Image 1 (cartoon, rainbow, N blue to C red):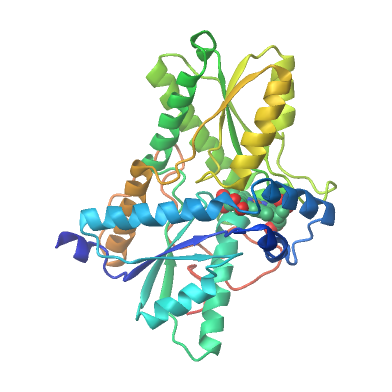
Image 2 (image 1 turned 90 degrees about the horizontal axis):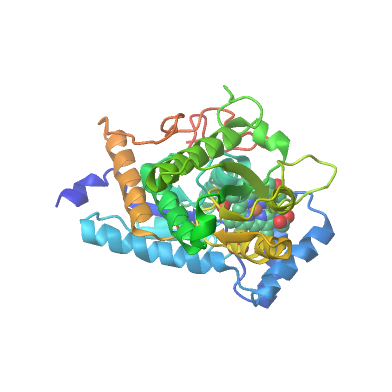
Length: 374
Ligand SMILES: CC1=C(CCC(=O)O)c2cc3nc(cc4[nH]c(cc5[nH]c(cc1n2)c(C)c5CCC(=O)O)c(CCC(=O)O)c4C)C(CCC(=O)O)=C3C
Ligand SMILES: [Fe+2]
């Protein structure tokens, strides 16, 4: 079958994600896993713990990943792509190291990794590569021979990602009263990160202040706003704001915060906004609490009409995009020159991270890079 050949040389796809608590007793140990060595103030931990407890101590991210796993497996089966899909997390069960042991036990030798973050940054890309390198080292120390591990290129600008986001914005606009639709501003949101982390995001060759993280988000938001403008026949005003800031208040993080910005927009007489969480791939806690709970409450308090646009989640068009990315990379690894579709002005992202890509505060080995340990 065509699909069986299409995934070679890979014999497994690994969905690699953040992980989250599954009940109240998991919340504290989960937060300790997340923040180990990251210098997060205790008060912030208590605050974030309370967000999880509002949801019964259950992070929505696991359910989101289970849905994505099922959707990928169904899509692959339907298309005859014979590639088993595994799941492992950084911060909670199923833990990455356990999943890698399972891959070895199943005889998998060439693994392609799909991370549930779409953009360049330490938290969204390199840290996962470091987790992979560490897990591979652990396996070797147990006398196991780990598989070779690659990582998919960043998919923030893949047509199947941005077209799905744009479609969600159009549906969201339709939920606003007709009289407010034309003027509604698109407020794109992403995770705030320290300015110092943003500046060094992406390849060291550089993108200027804000690094690849800022450049990629601006590019993605512009593409979506333009598509929405074309579809509705009204040029659309848009901007990028930030959410979910943590860390010390003395350290500068990307601004403005979405809540502060909503206050300014209301003060300027703006009446309606669509919040577009373009920086996130699924409706996990940052979306369900920081946007759906907190930012929507801010808007309501201000008398500002606000709707939150969907994330791509397990949308069939997005799942198809992931399959296309897997087959594209497999073809590249076989020495072919597949098309590498990308919207916007930055082009398709690299397949293999260059030296120093998305540098962290401490130099650590990272898998799936040109300088990765074999
Ligand atoms: C860029 C980025 C993404 C976006 C890309 C992506 O979507 O993956 C992301 C996603 C996520 N972040 C998540 C959760 C948390 N992030 C934290 C802390 C931090 N995140 C950071 C960055 C990012 N994080 C940073 C720079 C920190 C400071 C500490 C550090 O430098 O490492 C903390 C500690 C408490 C706090 O300070 O908030 C928690 C609990 C969850 C799970 C949600 C769920 O359970 O549903 C998800 C998907
Ligand atoms: Fe985070």
